Length: 234
Image 1 (cartoon, rainbow, N blue to C red):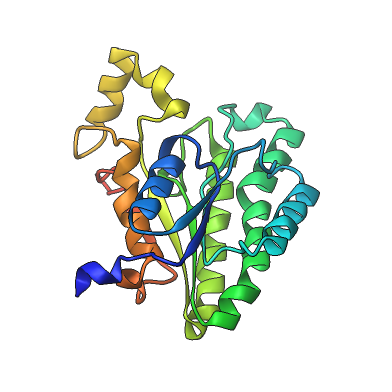
Image 2 (cartoon, rainbow, N blue to C red; image 1 turned 180 degrees about the horizontal axis):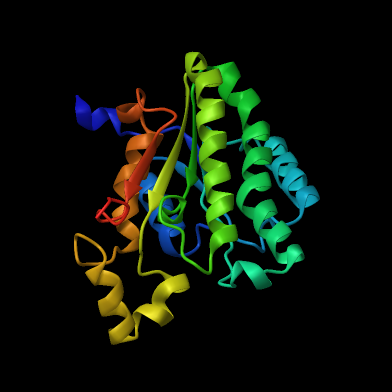
């Protein structure tokens, strides 16, 4: 019986930033369990452009592809000390990482409400709990996402919609591959992680599948850390 609850057959899932890294692994898992996955990258829809988001969803609506499951995975980050952080770059990070998520939630909500079933998932970051010194703005955008999740989750829970924050730690993805290829730096990073290892993209897929399926129907407004214990006090 529990195996059947993970089945996503008949569901449409939009995973932003799903042509590589964590997003691709999540999309692959959803497809394995029967979902139709809409793959997204910047060429499909530039999340830094609010008009592009509305146009993209209008196209999905016209094609009968409005999502039952939305995973807001795509994000941008710049490693710049806060004292030198350009305001235009900070505004771009907030648009892609926060405002785009809000708008996509708004656009997906009517279908989810009408059918009394929906899943909204954001990809947060361990930086919400332990901000990198040069990524204070990125951490702030992710904290804003987490508060949005909790605020919306309470309002839509009775409508069969769950809203959750999946929070990765250090993953060996394209974004981190260059720095993790330095053995000295990689050793320093893994030493700070209780599991003494960094994650691979597929390590996030199981938690995402849980949150997207009926197996996770009673989980909402939550932050699930996939970080090897990095956020634990120590």
